[in-house]
Length: 553
Image (cartoon, rainbow, N blue to C red):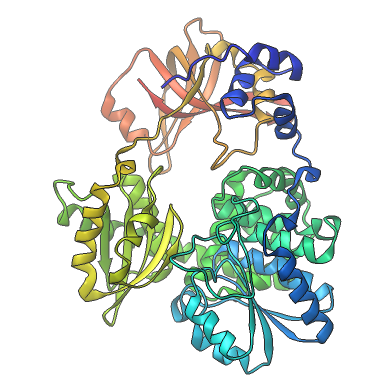
């Protein structure tokens, strides 16, 4: 749907020297005053929210400082995904710089599962830890935190996930999703760890060097690029590009990211999956060591290890996805299920979330993928836009052993005998949740003749970057366009072509992912209306425009 025009845009365009179409986008997205537009276009670190906006932050800081002063051993208990690993790699070194006797621990996905594992904690307590700080977990760890309390150990929870019925009895909870719900709710765990480090050190400048890790964790966790996250990414991407961390340098080499300014896509599809592969296929300790080592040769060894793990992950994932798709097609040939639940004893636990995401992409339905071992299933779920799979699963929690996550992604465990009833009840509950029927609007921002897509417009568009969840790259519409020179196939199903306007004077490169077969099935089309996201390409000072096609008719 083409969004309505905004008459006030002309004044804003003049005030900020913007193309009118870009001014309209800002106004539609709620930046309706000069001060809001100013802070959005110039996201300086000075605009970051004070870390003490979180209701328990002062309490957490005082307890940690007391532990450091008393020489108490501090355990930072993280998570095996990119967000958890980066959060640990931010907080533990900050504590050590402050003189703390601190150690980070990253649980094993398969052996220990997500969150606080009581058996692992019991073993760790033998080392004499008196304070445990969880990062990217803990908000649903009530039983484990009670266990720690019984052992005389205080717990500080640093987590961005959604709590369930009750908050855990932690000493302090640094989260915008719990208690008074103060602070920026957009931050991932790495952002929360950064804020805690800032509060502990008393200086933003003292933790500035960790912005490269904040960028990495924020993007990999698909955190919305709103509020502080936009500022952290805008300021952190150049720091990542010039990072002094041997591990990140080595990882960028093996991922073949040699750009001076790594993009959101480079991190989301290049760096993030390799770090995640460590937790999925082997030991997440390798990823933590990579991000914290100061040894260049060790960094290169670890980066190559993660790269190899990522290749194995891709192979295992591809096989599991094909099997899961076959299960969906055979179990529900009429497509009546509103939520897909598939399971197998053969699927590797490390790829379940990725397979679920690919099922969502193929079938446009929330999906839960479960690996069964000895009568117990461990699963990951992913949702469609606008629908909270967490809320739906929460209504069936009595059938589950464990459960946690947020609206779009979750993890669970379930007894095999409960699976048929779980699938049935989940789909019944989904019938009562109208949001599942809501279709996301493409949201076309403006209709622009292809000839108007010049450097000035795209320079102004770049001022809205970085783009991602919460700040999507704008879509534009151009009519009376034709394909010049035919369509080519790249990779498995990527369409590549050149498009030209009616006059024949304006030509752009165009690419459409997972769309070549659709084009072939549609047959020859003489004249098109295309919906796309434009990007300005710079090859040694020579500018060109590439269009990423979202749709065409």
